[in-house]
Image 1 (cartoon, rainbow, N blue to C red):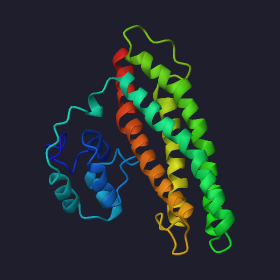
Image 2 (image 1 turned 90 degrees about the vertical axis):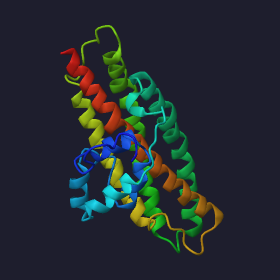
Image 3 (image 1 turned 90 degrees about the horizontal axis):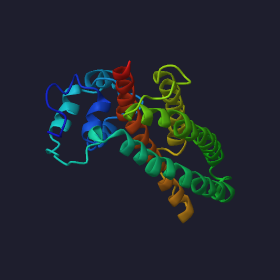
Image 4 (image 1 turned 180 degrees about the vertical axis):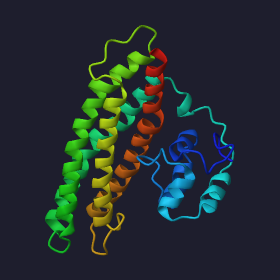
Length: 239
């Protein structure tokens, strides 16, 4: 059984399981269970919502070999966690957005007549990208600095937004919006299935889109299931 999954798996939160052992994400993806925005659901509730046999999911999780790696995000200090999110995931979003948008423009111009869905995909991705860039700035200049202060030894500066749960709720709503756009893109691309007449750029574009979704899932998971709960706990300990 993977690290952090002892006890009744059915009652544990999906996001908590993935936080303890990232390999569990592949299992939840296999069964169509959302471990990012839906990470607070218990395994039993998530299976019930998805119409899946809970026993099958539990069995798959129990089959994960023990993982005693020290690189456990649940035990990372706040500064390390935030640095990782910003330097790895935020940096990836900023580099990938213009690259994928360029691919989409190219394949739309070349293949758009035979595949009109490409115009819709480009529009969805453009909206997603604009929203995400604003979202990253809110985290980097508002939420994350305050969370770093909460984790520091001195007294944090007065919060401009009341409890830290207020901006967290905003970030979570924006994560959900991003998920909606990605869901539309996934449907429009038939889960990133490349058509028979696709050129190399077309294939690369869809591979990049699929990778973008996987990275954003990991990104949102680290925030909603690891960082945000730590921030709420730290603030509670100071009041």
